[in-house]
Image 1 (cartoon, rainbow, N blue to C red):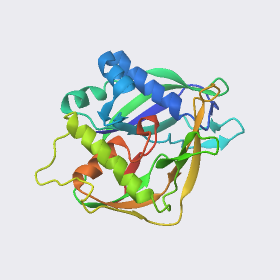
Image 2: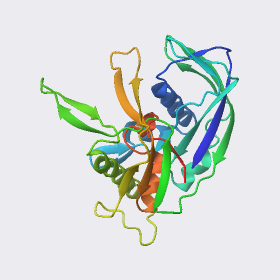
Image 3: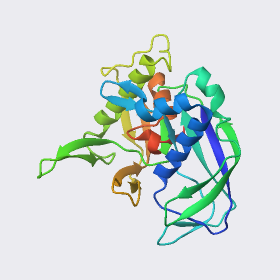
Length: 268
């Protein structure tokens, strides 16, 4: 299920930090916790495990600001409202409660340097259709695909790959298949009749044009545990079983989806 959430900006000319994904994700978890603490604990501490990985099976887009100015501290908001989309791959029981999680809540988004007071003004369900094995998408938040490399000091660190990298397609579908298996294992979804989602199933990733934008996001800004994640914004085409396309669209393509990475909209 996909929802569009619109916020009323409660202070004129407030400045939104350039990196706000971690704080927005924390607010989403809080809303889930206030409504259903058992669900929140499961998502935060465990998620839907698959081997050594765990997936939260939701994602959200960047915030859309109709009018803004750029400043050294962040984005000065000039419009009375801002919005974003959030999508969940959930079973029917959880889906029925999600829309009520966020209604009328007020909160402050930002870090100790820049903050924006917001209140939920509206939440609307966004219809979508996945009825083909080939669909085109546009990222609405940076898409993260990574592998690991060993540094000269012997440490392991993430290496974030652009969609032009020769390993990108294989790692992209490896992550998507793991999410799919996790959702099946935890009975979040049921495989469609005749569905064949395995590593040997023909799947293809195609970059639609050369307009690829890199975006570096800081997580936990100002804290000792702060890290930086690099994702990319671009248009792409996927050929894969419809079950896989649905899982990616609703739970996010690529890594760190619950931190606001890998959200997309369907172009056609």
